[in-house]
Length: 287
Image 1: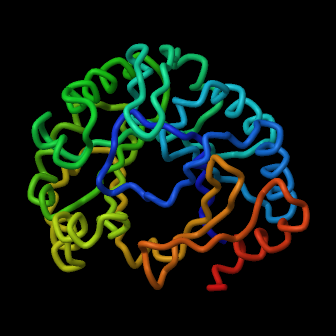
Image 2: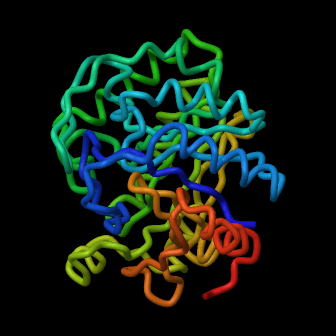
Image 3: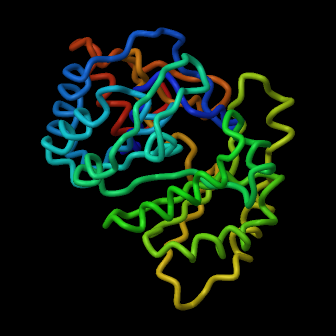
C-alpha cells in the first residue's frame, strides 16, 4: 500500500527547490465534502489508517481546521500535518503561487486532530536556508521560534530535512539544535530527489549521491540518551511509494521511471475512477 499525501492547497509561504512542481495551475480547490467522501471510501475499501496533509502549505487553506476535524471524525489513527508553520506564529501572506492573506492559526485548534506536526528544517542559519527555501528571509529563526512556542503544548513534532550536497555536512549541527526541543519526537532525513521543472540546473545543484547520503546519516553523532527517532528516507526507499491528491481533484503518482513527470491515476470526484485509484493505491504497480 502506498502512502497517501493530501496536497490540497494551492499556495505556500515559501518556494522550495526540492518541491514537486507537478501541481495544477487551477485555482479551484477540491471541496471539503468531496475530499472527506473520498477518504471515507478509501478507508472503507483498504483499511487505510495514516494520512498526511502536505504540499503546498495546508495552513494556507481557509478550511484546513474543518478538514482535519472531518478526517479525525473518520477515525484515522494517524493524521500528520506538514507545514512551514508561518501562520502558527502570525498572520502572513503566501509567497507562491497565488498570493493569499492567511490569518494566524491557533495551534490549540489543530493539536487535538493530529498525531504529528511536521516542520521543515534543513540548515543552521537564515542565509543558508535561503539557498533551498526562498520567500522568507528569517525562516530559520522563525522555525526555532515556532519550536520554542510549541514546547508549551503536548504535540509531537516531526522535523523534515531534505539532505542535499550543500547541507549534508551540517547534520550533526542540526542534530544538536533539535536536541534542545524535547517535543521533537522524530527527525526524517529525505535524500534530495530530482523533481524540479528546471532540471538539470536545479538538480545538479542539489543532488546528493546514495553513498554520500548514507555516510552522512551514519556519521550523525547520536546522543545515547536522546529519545529522538531518526528516520533516513533514501531515494530508493521512497521510489513508487506515494499516491498524491492535489488541490484540483486529481490522484497521481510520481513516475518512478522519470521523476520529472507524473502519472495521473484518476479524479477523486468521479465514481468511475475510484476502482483504478484504489488499485494503484494498493498495488504499487506501474500503469
